[in-house]
Image 1 (cartoon, rainbow, N blue to C red):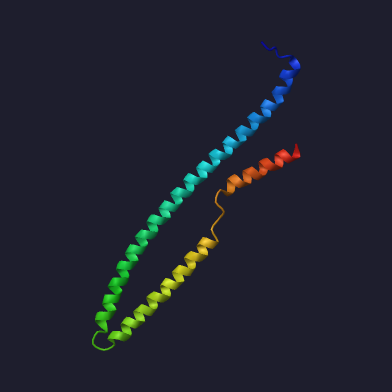
Image 2: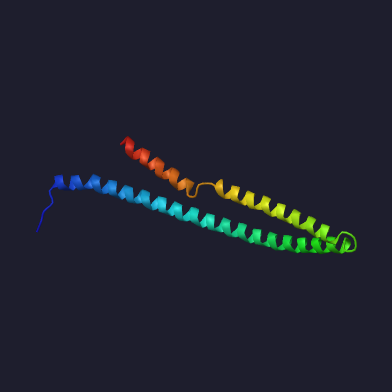
Length: 128
C-alpha cells in the first residue's frame, strides 16, 4: 500500500492540469477541423451539382445552336459554318479549361482557421 504525501500530490496537480489543457486544446482543434471539413464538403457538393446542371443545359443549347446554324447555311456555306462553330466551341473550351486550372491553382488554403488556431496555441506555449 502506498501513501501519497502532499508534496507528490502537489507535483502531479500542475502536470495534470497542463496535460488536461493540452488535450482540451487538441479536442477543440479537432472539432474545428471536423466543422471545416463538413463545410467544405457541402460547398463542393453544391458547386459540383450546379456545375453539372449548367454543363447539361449548355450542351443542349449548343446542340440546338449547331443544328440551327447548320440548317440555315446548308445550301450555301455548309462546311464553312460547321468549321466556324467548331472553332468557336474549341476556343470556349480552351478558355474554360484555363480558368478552371487557374481556379485550382489559386484555391484558398484548406483548414485555414484551424491552422491559425494552432499557430496561436504555439505562440501561447512559447511565451510560457
